[in-house]
Length: 68
Image 1 (cartoon, rainbow, N blue to C red):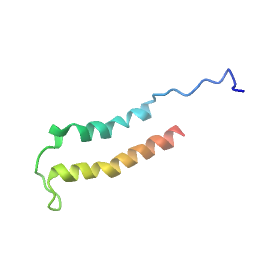
Image 2 (image 1 turned 180 degrees about the vertical axis):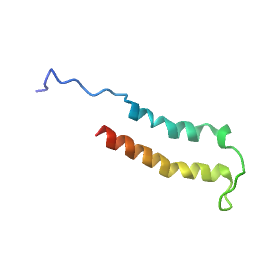
Image 3 (image 1 turned 45 degrees about the vertical axis):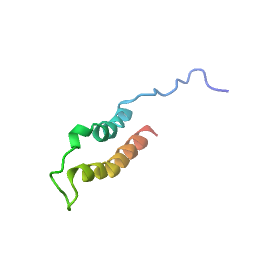
Image 4 (image 1 turned 135 degrees about the vertical axis):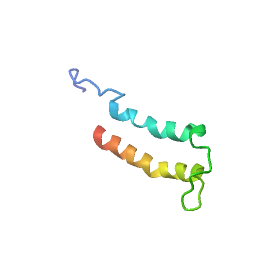
């Protein structure tokens, strides 16, 4: 039986708000819809999106470790 004095953890914490950053950074297309600067021959449009793959994983890892 559950302890009635135990309060559940809040669903929204400051750490979880960090998870919004990758969504805003990759879904706001006018921000990165350009060809320059190029990196390794790839236009900015492509390498910017690919850069967010490891950044998103890092943010998720940080939130997971702080919440558990």
